[in-house]
Length: 321
Image (cartoon, rainbow, N blue to C red; front, side, top):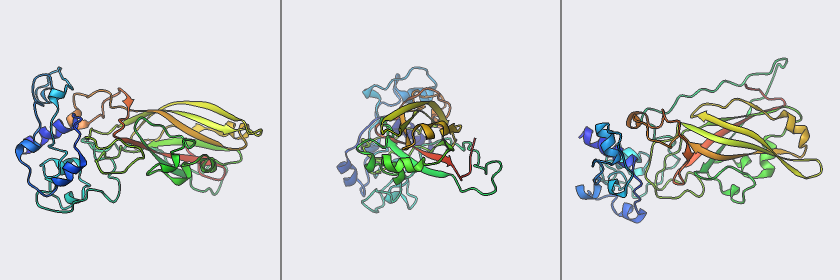
């Protein structure tokens, strides 16, 4: 049975099957037949499951290889492995509804980072410290952005006020300017957070294309950073700050923004664009380590979200390298 569950776990991860919400709800508290839950043709030659089980280098994402509802329908044996945050899975059931339970799968909080078969990366992020020559300093400023795949963080975007699981100070240009406000010293760094769960009913980020099947989460993000500022004459300027590649739970090196403070005395803020996850190819050890060993980048799926913390050092706060 363990082998069977693991096999279908692989089958679900590598597929893009979409299950209608109403169908899923109707199946919550009924025992599903094996034909309703099983995958189809996934282990045939040329399909990804064939690669996973035989080591063959030949794979396919053809529709003929896609599984059915083993991990999508509440009541099927794999449902709670894929969606452990679902209400009917909280009692420890691995079948998700075959023994009864709530008809709502909306978790109270986003279930961050469940798609890491090798464990969520521990990462590396140095501690902030009191600047030399200073005896006391406030803590650094921290805020979070959580954005749908294929979209970028821009507080000037008309939909920015709708961003879910994003700190309120980063949802508009005026408030974002206060996040970076300082007289002279300004630094920023980025800490990439684990990819949120792509559960069908989780409102994790604004504009997400639901429902969706899950894939393993990114272990690194690659993104561009641009500073925008307002000069004394109210004209605006834009400064490219380069491309960052940062692992989950790790921090980027500090970017010194101090030279822009006087250049843009009416405020600065950042735009994060061209965000890609290292999910572009399926590594040979995908089933045990997910995308841990992948270095090929692609846009995060519109089914998914990406998320990171921004940390700012300014006058009177601790600093970082």
